[in-house]
Length: 99
Image (cartoon, rainbow, N blue to C red):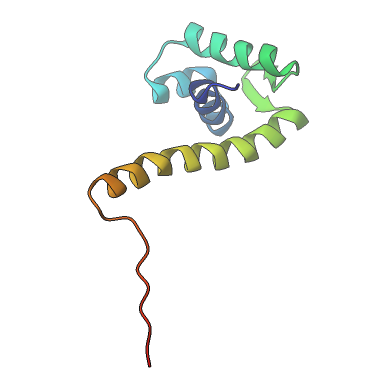
């Protein structure tokens, strides 16, 4: 199963296009960010980023993952909100009928 932390790191790296800026945005050092990306690539068995002298850019496989990862992360973030609303009794269905 793909780790959400790896997905988040991948998305930020793709958005920033540079390891240093992505690491700063994530609040981590460059080596751990590189390990997160390498772990994700190893898990999926594909190269996700082209490493260039002045940054990185997604491969074709990386572009596919980027689109899906954004959806997954948005959905994962929304789950916590839904759970909290349900715990406060703010979530549910209300049916109103007119006659």
